[in-house]
Image 1 (tube, rainbow, N blue to C red):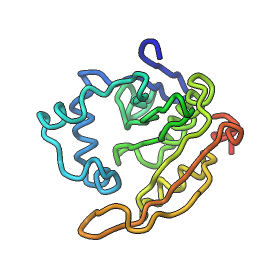
Image 2: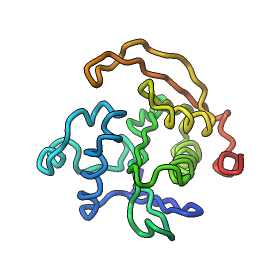
Image 3: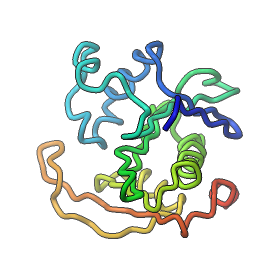
Length: 189
């Protein structure tokens, strides 16, 4: 993938994270409502640990990570979350879809819009054949997001992750290129 990826949507722009976004990213990955659903964010990150383990967030042949930034309204010109296709296995035409949004931005449709445009980029520009998603059981909002995007629930892996002192199930979703109708169909539906 040559150069950074930028995607213009209706109400948001998707852009790669930069040094100026570290504070926002730390706030997001350390928020208890975000952390409880994402295994890699098990414990809070200090800036030093974040930089050692998760920074820089690269957009390269291995994956694409973009920050949704509203163009107007309460959150204008400030990132509200993160959407990813990572890892990308080019030889298999496969990527995993990941998403998190700061709770202050929940319920405004940003996740659906950003995700629909990222998936379209994956299928159209990256020529992916399949995108998968895994959702920790109990994360009903992420399950609904996957279903609205057209993902098919492919199964439940029982007691796959350890979270909050217990083993929890993980829901598995998949979306094939010939099942993808594009962002307009998702956003109008």
